[in-house]
Every structure is written in structure tokens, then in C-alpha cells.
Image (cartoon, rainbow, N blue to C red; front, side):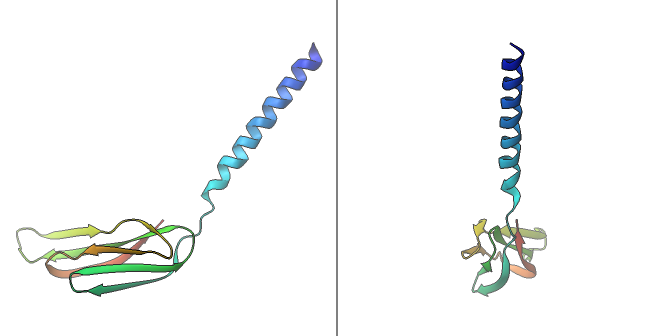
Amino acid sequence: MKTRLRALALSATTLLTGALLVGGAAGANAAPDNCTVSTSGSYASSYCASGSGQHQIAITVLHANPSVGYVYNTGPWVSAGATSTAYIPPGTIVSIRTNKR
């Protein structure tokens, strides 16, 4: 009887340890690198050539209508090797940047 309980406890411990090791390995992504930002007309784009994470274009504009103030716009999150594009609202561009995760 004691042998069965000991074997069961050892099996449960092995399963839990394995689950923790597999679950902990998911966060090993490298942030995108070699990123460039470009504009064309009313659109801004970001492109990251390497890495295994994701990136997005992010834009801050002081709107043409002073009562509106600052306007923020972002493109979709995409994997490295793909392009994230977003519309640039009318006004003065304050910043265009690439967010990474």
C-alpha cells in the first residue's frame, strides 16, 4: 500500500514539474529588431526585419482643429517581417514610433 502511494505521489510531482517547465518556456520571444518607420501621403508604416515578437506603428498628432488637441492612432500588431500601417490624422505630427512586444 505504501509503495502505491509513494509511486502515485512521485507521478504527480513529475507531472506538475513537467507542466511548469513547459509553461515557463513560452516567454522566450526576442523583440523585433532592425525596424524602420516611413510615411507615404496620409499613412505611416513600420517594418521590422528580424526577431520573433510583434510590432505596431504608433502616431501622435496635434490635430488641425485646436479644440480637438492630441490624437493618437496605432496600426495592428504584426509579426517581424510584416508591415504595420496606420492613418495619420490631419495636423502636426508630434511623433511616429514603433511599439514592440
